[in-house]
Length: 282
Ligand SMILES: C[S@@+](CC[C@H](N)C(=O)[O-])C[C@H]1O[C@@H](n2cnc3c(N)ncnc32)[C@H](O)[C@@H]1O
Image (cartoon, rainbow, N blue to C red; front, side):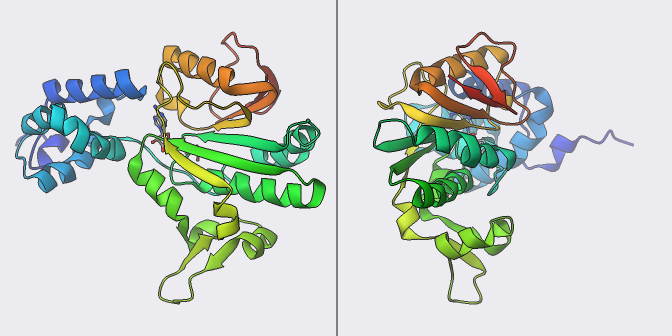
C-alpha cells in the first residue's frame, strides 16, 4: 500500500521551494498570509494557469511569473486565482442598518456638498452596490446631497465583474423589494436569470485597482465612510496595523470605518472609537 498524497492527484506538484516563493511574494506585497495548509488549494487553483500556459512544472511557472514579462502578463492572473473573493449583497446586514440609521443622518448634516464613500477590497461589487442602494434611497428621501462610492481591489477579474454590474438572480434574494424595483433590471432574455444594476446607480460608483499594503495611498481624497471588510482576516497583526493606519489618514474626522464582523482592532492604538459592532468613528 502507498500513502495517499492529496498533492499527487495533480499533474504538477507544488513543492516547498515554489510554494515558499509564491507565499512570500504574496504576503510581502499584498499582505495575504498563505500558511502551509493552503498549499493544496493554491496548487489546485494554479493548475489551470499551468495548463493555460503549457507549463509542466511549478518551477517553470514561478520562473515565468516572477520574470520581468511575467510580472506584467501573469502576476495579475496569479493574484486573481489566489485571492479569496467571497462576497454578497447585504453581507453582515447589521452594518447597513447602522449606515441608514446613524452614519448617513449624521453625515448629511455636514457642510460638504457630497458624501464620499470608499469600499476598500470590494471584490465583485456587491458591497459597493449595497451601500449605493442604501445611500441613494436615504438621500432621496432625506436630503439633496449627492454621493459617490469608490470600489477598489487587487483582483482585476473581480473589478471587471464589478464594473459590468451583472449578477445572478439568486444573489439578489436578500435585496429588499423596494430596492429591486428602483435599482435592478432583469434580463429580458428568460434563459439568462440575471439582473443588472441600473445606470443611474452605476453612475455613482467607480472602480480602481488599489493595494491596501501600499505605503502611500495614491488616492487623493478623504472619505466620510470607509468599508474595509473581510480582508484584514487574511493579514498578519503587523500588516493590519499598517493598513488601518493608512485608512485612518484617508478618513475624515468624525467619519466611520466599517470592518468585517470577525475583524477586531480593539488591541490596536488608533484614534478610533468603537461605536457599534465592528464600526469605528474617527
Ligand atoms: C473576501 S473578499 C471581501 C469582499 C467584501 N469587502 C465583503 O466583505 O463582502 C476580500 C477581497 O479583498 C481583496 N484583497 C486581498 N488583499 C488585498 C489588498 N492587499 N489590497 C486590496 N484588496 C485586497 C481580495 O481580492 C478580495 O476581493
